[in-house]
Amino acid sequence: MIGAIWTWLTSTSSWSGDDGIPHRLLQHAGYSALVLVVAAAIAVPLGVWIGHSGHGRSLVTVANSLRAVPTLGLLFALTLVLQPHLQGNTAFLLPCVIALVLLAVPPILSGAYAGVEAVDPAARDAAKGVGMRPREVLRHVELPCALPLLMSGLRSAALQVIATATIAAYVGLGGLGRYLVDGIATNDYPRTGGGAVLVALFALVADIVGALVQARVVSPGLTGKGRRLARVDHPTVPSGATAS
Image (cartoon, rainbow, N blue to C red; front, side, top):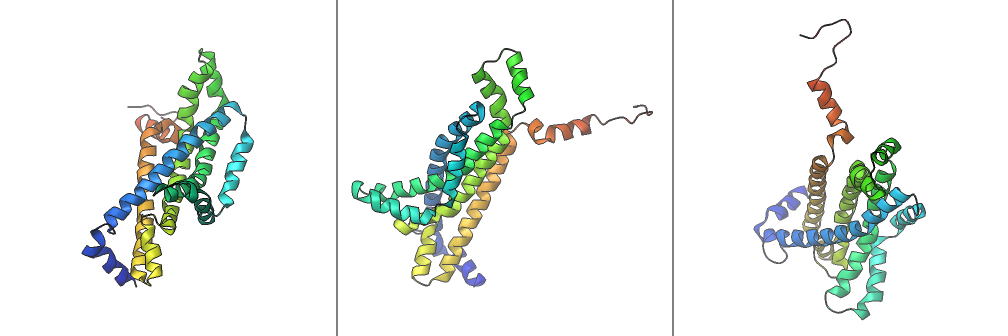
């Protein structure tokens, strides 16, 4: 089976046409990116506000409870409800986006909320002591300090969305899920296995890119890297010894 999957993945026919890997991968990336942008636009401001103000913590609990909702079942239900009121591709795309957004919101919301709430109170007091207003404290102190957990939430959401966006194929949309659905329907198991491998590789590459972005935007002082570099550049001189 592994050999058959490899043959399918390396076949020229698998890389050309509207059903080719590049086209399906681009569709899958488009769905995933759209969902993540919408989910982040909802969850990041809400999570930051909850962490900053201390109000609305119950919303985080409610959002986390959405994890128990079966995404595929929700997609079918939304499609049945919305399809009669929409036209064209939107009748299938909108239910898919809503279902995946509900999947992506909880980790992003939790990361944003936990990141802001976990900021050292001494850092907030110091910022207020130098005359910063609440918005300035949020912008210059709380948000930079919250970035590690915020980015972790975004990466977690990206992995879940990329892995689950295959359900788009169940309502007639494209993406890598087409290989899974069509392969099972026609007993073409190399195609099904190849589609699964592509989804896994896409998720892995996305997480690596996310890790690189996180390392770029998060201050080294928040990850401990800055302290390690400082110890290397300025090693502690043992007591009783003299530095040369």
